[in-house]
Length: 227
Picture (tube, rainbow, N blue to C red):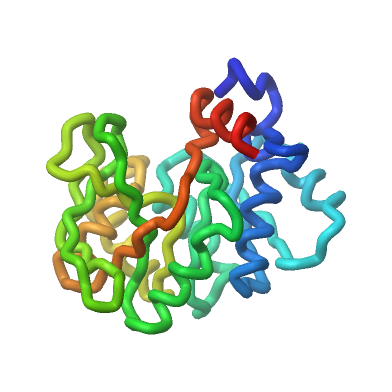
């Protein structure tokens, strides 16, 4: 993304005049989320300044620093001291959606089923995201049966993307996984999704609408033309 963002953090790239991070916060607020924790890394003072200057008060925001870029799972565990025993809704600003955004649907799936829930999108294949094998339910949701490791070739074109809701016990899963890894290794999210799917405790929420991977130059340019 350096070719597009230059020195600006990609979270602050603008689509339709608004930083993608603000699009994500607006989606959270529309879904009824009152408190947000933003996990960032050192060297991004622009994000702290953006949060200081933002005009809207909902949701309230806390900033947490991930000292080293050691995976999405590690980033999530950095937020644990702030979140306490609250349920965990995860929104990645790399994924931008047509309004109103899918977070409300993922939250509703979690509340109605009592199980961890993840947004699922049908892709054309390729890429390196993990893939999900799913079984349709009578309520319009999916039971996620398996999640593959991130790899260019995968047995499905259904992909979990950046909207999830977990119970706070998910942090214990991440810590057990961390304990099995060599010191300093990346702590990814996919093994936890795989565990939940294997236990029959992961619900897929089909995306209704279009999403843009604004963390990639091509996806960002698509979004700037679409909005």
